[in-house]
Image (cartoon, rainbow, N blue to C red; front, side, top):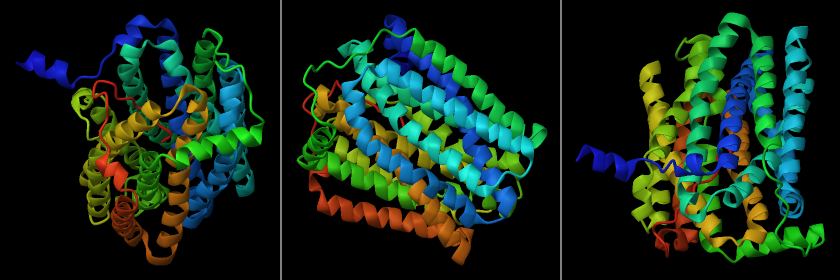
Length: 423
């Protein structure tokens, strides 16, 4: 009975056994993402230490969202036109240089605030190409019957690094300081580069190459004709902009919870913990056809958990609520990306994945600005609670405007797909 239950719920790991290319890509990215998540904690901690301003921390999101959105728009045609393996090599080198510059700035002691913003903006631009490229590669290195498990493993890996990276980052910052935290991020890129270099070439399948502007236009035209995809984007944007108060985590850790950098790391890690557990338990989704309804319910749970998080004073209760929110987000991400990847043709996959990445990652950056601004004007608790309320309200509006999401029924219940995770 127990074995049958585990088999029903647990994620399929066959892709790791059967595809050496996927195994290398997955392992290298896992190591690299731990370092990236350490930097995710280090940058807002450093900015808050330098300024004492939640608005300045929120401005980190503004510095990232502008290059991310602009680059994401043009990244799709690049991903669909050039060898994706070579693209990954370039983006990983660029990201490692950005982390190296942050380490140098931390060693100097008090780097200019604008310099930090410039570096994180450059890293966001590189990530806007890197992450969609990875997602577009996976269907080419994994057999069709293992695609579900491969994407689920990819998403679970990303969420797991969101547990380890922030927790380790908070500990390192507390005991050894910011320079070592950034230096570890630089070192972890070696694992990702080693895995990418050993991948087979990933040339584009289509021999016909459209002009860049026409290629971008065709990607947007396709998305515009798919209300299910557009509705999923709109719903996720509401959750990420209003319901992810990560920009004020440094404020909450220092004031409400009195937890210091270690507590800050735990706050950043908690949503990833819930998301990872949920992602590793997505086996049951292979038999679900009403994926759109799961999206709506999951985002509702996300918003409710964030509202409750805004009222608590206990760190441990707060961590549980963030984990619940992360688990709900994980299920929503599974279903959204399933719908998008099964609808999108291969020649448009890079463009649509770039759009998806722009929403998934750009939304939280916009949320950083919103949360920081509201916290500066009305306080941290008001920022959290109002964000959760607006998340649910925005979801309701999107559900009315895009009824196709609620009505969506998959044609092949055994073929769900999970995205790489831009957050």
